[in-house]
Image (cartoon, rainbow, N blue to C red; front, side, top):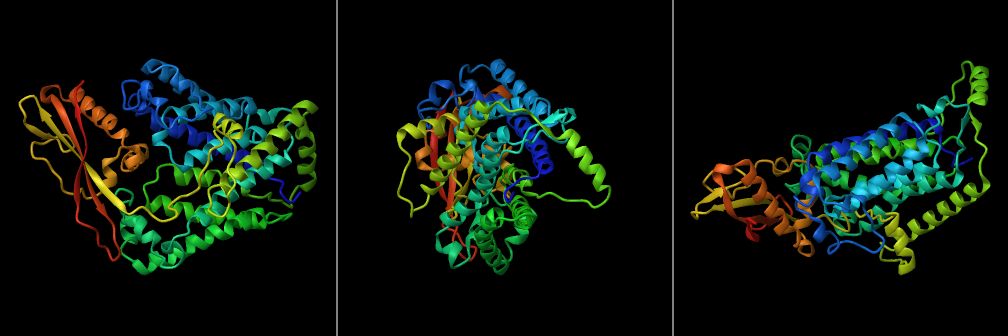
Length: 465
C-alpha cells in the first residue's frame, strides 16, 4: 500500500517515454549512416574490438548496410507508436526495450547517462500496468494488476539515480568550495547560450546553486522511498526533480538527458482523489478494472526476475562507490550485459571535467593547399568560436567529441577524421581533399574565469581511402 503507484501516472509516463523514444529515433535517424553503418565512423569490423563486453548483442550489428539499418529504425519507430497509443502494451514494451538495447549496443560511444535511465524504465515498464489508462488496451474489460515488486523496482531506480550521484560527488568543489556549477558552466563545449551564459556571470549564485543541487540529491531518495499512504513525499520529489532537470536543460547542452529524467519521474505522482460523483467513479472502476486471470507460473517467474534485477542493480550501484568493496562475479555480469542492466550515475562526479576545447579541421588537397573544412575557407581558423556548442549537430556528436578527448578512447579519433574527410569530398567534389589534420585546441579551466594557455594538439592525420 505504501509503495503502490498510481496507474494513471504510470500510463502518462508510458506516453511520455514513447514520445522520447520517437524523438530520439528522429535525432539518431539524421545520423543513421554516420553512426550505425559501415559507411560511417563505426564500421562492423571495429565494433567487437572496443568496448564490447561478453553478453552484448545487437540486431543492428548483423549487417552494416544502410537499407538494413533503415528497416530496423522503421520497425523501432512503429513499435514506439504502438507503445504510445497503448496497443498490446506489454508486447510492444518488450519489443521497444529490446530494440533500444540493440540500438545502444551498435554505437556505445554516443551514449550518455540518460540512455541508461531509458533502458531501465523500459524494462520496468514490461511489468508495470502502464497500459491500463489512456490506451487502446484500456477499452478492454480486464486489465493488468499492479505488480508490487515492479513498483519497488521502479522507485529504487529513481531513488538510486540521486542517491548514488550524491555519494559519487565526493570532491571539494561539491562538498566544500561550492565551485562545481562554476566549472560545469566554464566548459564552453557544454554551456548553453542565453541561460547558461547568463548564470555564468554570477559566481555567488553558482556557489549557492551548487550546494542546493548537492543536498537536493541527498534528500530526493528519502522523499521517494519514505513510506506514505498518500504519497506526499513522492509528489514533492517529482516537483524538485522537475525544477532540477529544467535547470540543467536550460544551462547545459545535455540533449535529451534532462527530459528523460523528467518523464521517467512521472510515475512518482500519487493518486488524486476527487470528491464529486464518487459513487459513479467507484462503479466505473469496478467495471473496467477487473484484473486479468494470471498464469501462476508466469506470475512467479516475473516476480523472481524482478527480485533478481532489483538485487543486481543495487549491487551494481553500490560497487561504484569507494566504501563498498564487493564486485559482481563473471557469471552475473554476463546477464547484466545481456539485458543491459549496466548503469552508472556519476554525473559530474567525483569532480567536474576541467579540460575543454574545440576542433579544427585542416584539410589539404592534392596540390598541398590548405583549407579549413569547418569554416569552408582557405585560411585555417584556430580561434575559439563564440559558442562551441553550435559546432555540434546534436548531443550525440557532442558526447562523441567528449569521449574522443579521453586518451583511452583515442581509437575514435582517426574514424571521426576519416568521416569528416569523406563527407567533405562528397559535398564538395570541386574541392577534393586528400588529407585531414584533425586538431583539438585544448585548455584547462581554472578558478576566477581563468584558463591555461591553449594547446594545439594533433589528434590524427587522416587520408582519403
